[in-house]
Amino acid sequence: MTWLFYIIILAGTFIIMEGITWLTHRYVMHGFLWYLHKDHHQVEPGFFEKNDAFFIIFAVPSILLIYFGTYNNVWWMQAIGFGIMAYGIGYFLVHDVIIHQRFKWFTRSNNSYVRAIRWAHKMHHKHLDRHEGESFGMLLVHKKYWDKIRRDRKLMAGNKKVEYAPEMK
Image (cartoon, rainbow, N blue to C red; front, side, top):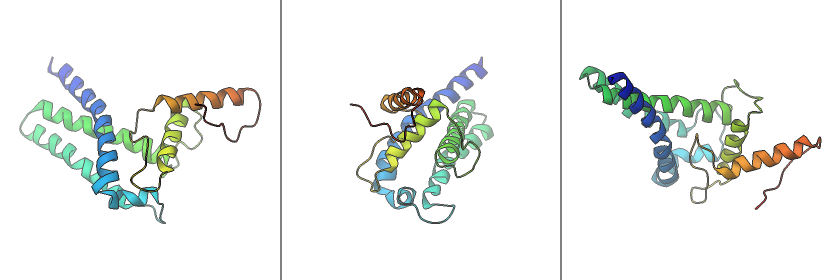
């Protein structure tokens, strides 16, 4: 029965991490740690960014929870650590691989989710400073971006070449 609770806590942690990520992105990365996140919005040459430091910042609690949970035989602590780690892997795949294509693994996807998440992130990055912004989450996509993808698909289904589908309000 413990394994069932382990999976529930791990999955629950993964889900809660989206909210924690939104809050951290909005109020920490676009707040007092903007100096680390700024180069992510204002692209500079090179593969690595100061923004990559957040990988370490988020990995530390995960590693500590896994370590102390394993060492002290506290299964729920370990489950939380692995839940954070699973979210980190998902974040890496979505943000660095699919959206920013820092690794050229999925460059030609026409999947609706991928298109919606890319569009949401593009709208986030149109703001070059820390004060204005939208779409601070990572894995969940706001309805307005899904609607935009649906409108684009309808326009393209009519065999018309569509460069840009204007926002409908």
